[in-house]
Image (cartoon, rainbow, N blue to C red):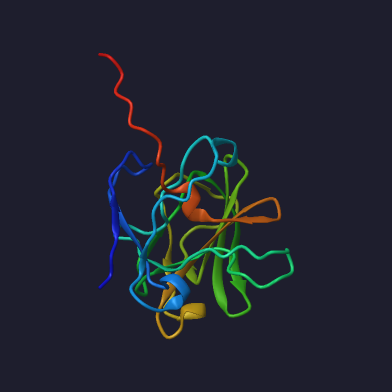
Length: 182
């Protein structure tokens, strides 16, 4: 039984979407629910991002920061996706890479706040130097399974400088809802 958290909020696209961790704790047993992993305000950008896939979004493999930069880890999240599914820009920015790395298509967007999103395996729909807006279709998921084999997924990596970050921390916000007097 897959449990999921449906998050309705004021995301950049204004949509509700579901997130489920298919890996579960230790990879066995029922999947765990992914809730917000938003850290302290000082560790977040001013604007949150939207997931690069339309709802529902299913996390097939979560971020796993390596203890040292050279050590093993999972430097991004894998989002379950069927081939040819639309891939959207998580936030506004400029395409700084669009090409093949080893055997798969990769797209990198440098966002306005300096963070960089990398998306793979994809078939690009934009070119280097092109300005994109949040939610714009920038690619489609390639038909090759990649590192989710035998399943197909979209890997979303996020970096600040050379430091890899958990993209899901920039998606959900657990802050209180405040109604301002009218």
